View 1: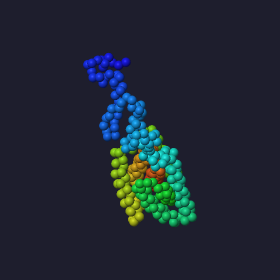
View 2: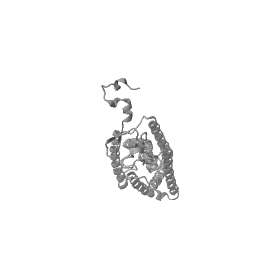
View 3: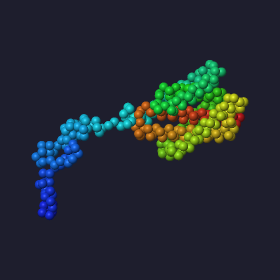
View 4: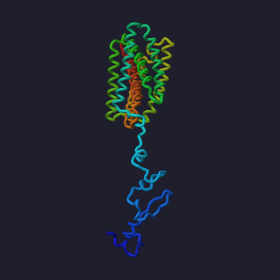
Length: 304
């Protein structure tokens, strides 16, 4: 039943219910509006079936075509399966297995040729540094280069750990346990939401790491070309303070790694970037272990 006000003579007859039923409009292919008669055979058909989609003939837009137009693959999935936490864990475990193999190789070589292992360790450290830069600046992660980095760093860690173990028995276990403790604590705090990487902290981190890198290169040069002690400028309480600062930097590097992994998984990035996440964790943990090992060695040197 229609509203009686609209059926009076006070309003135009297009408000009449019967005439409203007869008056139907559609948009033609020139963009204009055309009235359709009540007896039109197309009445009741969908717009796309009657008149076609833009640039197509009427009746040509089927379900398959609409799916092709509107059901598009997402940006991450277009390159394959998405990265998951399990995938990152598997790749990280693989990377650290190669680190352990490299360390075992250094220890085995050191037992047979103790005079040559430290020279090879220096070469491995330099090669690992170059591979680290290459992997850091590559747009696409390369598993072979990442595992090569793990192998060279593992050899260096095995050689330097064996050398310090002969001077400070038990230092290897102390450094490994301390590294695992820091890693577990940071992971627990990150998972609870108490620590996060922020843009402001990231800027401070990169400024600090540039300064630390300059100091480390200068100290390395003094150790190589002068008669300074084993740790160069990093001796005594000053060395402990620098070491504590470096441990804090390595710890925040872990926080940045966890943040990047979380954001990558939530964004559904391609599975191949799990290797980039594994590389980041490997770099941070190797760095953290070296700094802890050095601080323990300095403390034990002062205690003797």
